[in-house]
Length: 208
Image 1 (cartoon, rainbow, N blue to C red):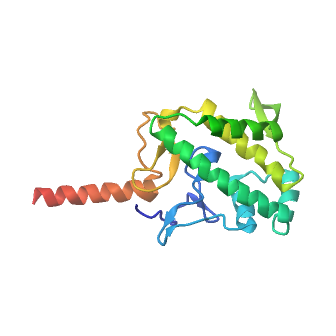
Image 2: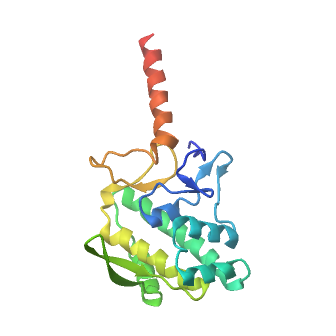
Image 3: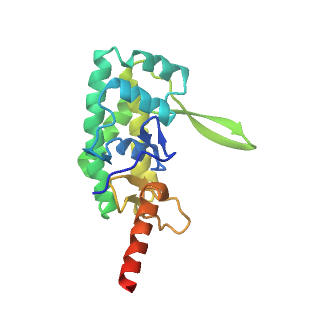
């Protein structure tokens, strides 16, 4: 498995954002870097940085919770649960990429968390249109579940599964938004160019 380079602009504060879905970017917080599989969320400080980089921490309520993330036993427990959830989600996404469906057990888990941490939305005018936006006002670390389970539900129920894929060259998952639906790599900058160069070099050798 080829390592993921961190030299492109698709990395924000050490985190990769190429998934086109928030929950897939979260899934990609354990990529394979030069030294092997790397946990990018080893502690609550890293989680705080990811929440800021992802845009989830833009509301006043979220910022207040982030302030307490590094000094809270509840925050440590939340991160531990969140990482375990990420790995169960990974197994489900891999099933989807192979043409399968989420397990009933995982759906029940998501439903339970949706009931416990419901997402709230509101409508507003934007550019002559009416748009729906999330009302995210957490009061404690566990309230952050609302964004993660809502994004998971969107992936499972409202996303074309045939366009959810793993990069052909690394472990990164993404949702293909290309017009033809033919995206093969996590990023042209990260894996695409490298594979094209390798293919070109092979063709040159074959010609000789």
